[in-house]
Length: 84
Image 1 (cartoon, helix red, strand yellow):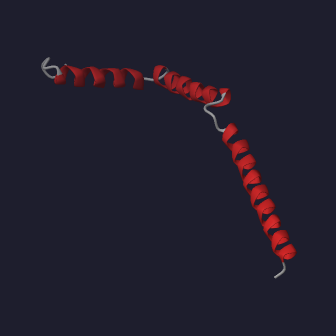
Image 2 (cartoon, one colour; image 1 turned 180 degrees about the horizontal axis):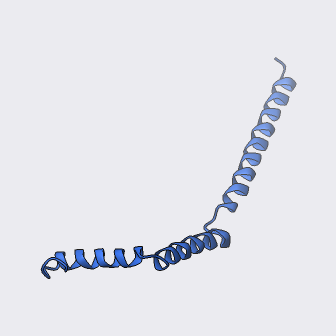
């Protein structure tokens, strides 16, 4: 192989390798920048779910049942004598 062809092949390989690394780094940076924590929409979704749960619990007898069961278990654990 002549020196000119060897030099051309080496130069081409270096350019392609550099271009590939640069392109991959740019794509990675673009996608990493998008996933930097919670967005307002995600927080709003969490708030909606919590509000729905609170409304469901307060709007039915299940809220009272849960409160009584928790109070009973706390009384049992603290040695208060079995709840009711």
